[in-house]
Length: 146
Image (cartoon, rainbow, N blue to C red; front, top):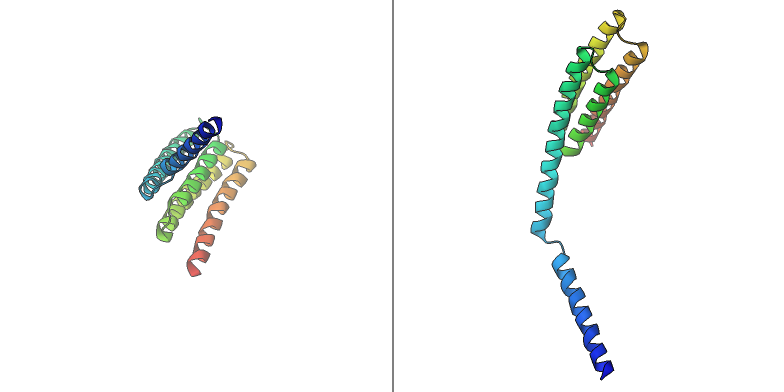
């Protein structure tokens, strides 16, 4: 009698576990929903970072923020773009946009350096940021040749 009840309990546990696995198993539609959700979040993050770069750039130009904050935001935007975009042409366009911003930053920073409003370290950080983008552009070009 006890063994029979124990057997029913074990069978019930096995059936429950199997049902739980079947319920929790990812379906093709839930995977595509997750992929769409991921893509939407990546786009939202990229757009938010784009706004942050614009705001930080304006504050830095006005002397209300330090260069390091602008460069950090720009690097995050670059990573977000590369993570989001799959098409090589879109990736290259995003990299070119980042490069143009880096050139503006470097030019303005040179003017600030000449006026005594920036340091040599700031100039080197701006140069390094531009080099990072140029390196990514070259990597994209090498990938395109393969």
